[in-house]
Image (cartoon, rainbow, N blue to C red; front, side, top):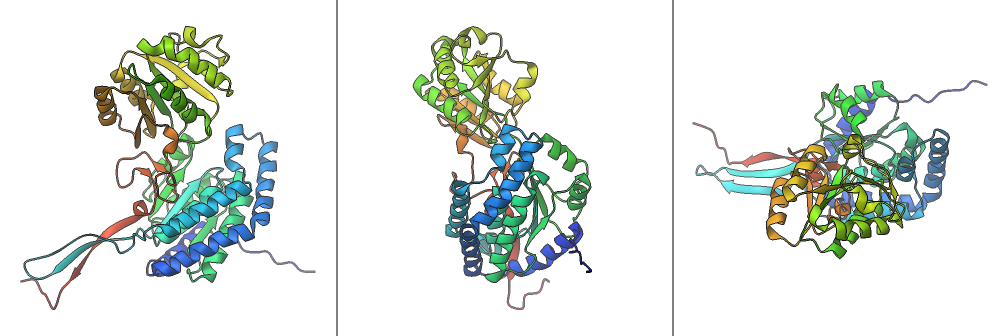
Length: 426
């Protein structure tokens, strides 16, 4: 009996279809977009067994290939995480639609009315590694902001991403979203990534979520504009005037609450005047949570034999995103030494100071150039949902166009709308 093969669309075809759909999507009213998002949320719940079965295939493959504990945690879906996706979609529904929002408006002396209005970017491509929840977050944000989307997940989450994209695309299309507005490329090799990164005729922006390897791969080839959702090498600085009980809780939460997240702290910097009072207690508390400490030589006497596993730090540790229960420890002379360390080794993501000294706080706030700077709070709050943005596509550490969580408004640009009544220029 003859068999027929299903033709897989090329990267260029997926991007071209997204461009065609995007023009129509940009004109959709808010009610239609919100109805489509509601349909997606309902479909995730209704098809949860199908989604979890696909995820189980990815987890099995991950175990067989020796995927790290951190990546396995990012890859894993369960009912709680699916319901987290659903909540994220419904949170986006509740947000104000940015499309058509007037940023400013004025009338010229000649009677022309000028408005600067938000409009969608057009087609957004998202490249991500081992996080299937990004599939739904990205779809929700791009759809609400009037953008078509091309998804390119990693091969490690191939089954999960495929079923999630299918669920979202079918539900959205049934609610009135143009076919092709949600596209998926297979998650193949670097040739496919290069092809996607050079689709500047059809794609307006690429947002990569991944490590330095992905960043380097795109930098070398991309002709499409890129906003890098970069890795996180975050710090907590415990000042001489810190409330040490608060500092213990903040360091613990920043490291332990979800160590595989990009906003988890990788290094604690401690003013040497409070090292003796703070570090032994910190070592005991974090040791009980399974954290391995990697102290600089000066900090070693304060943390050894306190219940935590201790491995002397190497120079590489200060520049490593461990994404695991590993925390570097270093003593500093003052807030400026802490700032200098963050400048030399941080990734510009999320950094915190614990202090009651207004001068130290002011110096830290104004001189640490990270996307999110915290005062007496955990770094773990750098998240679109936590910031009231519903969800996020990634955390930008760049300084132009978008910085921090990339939400609805960060997925828009603006244009000038000029209204006249037969005006001509003399």
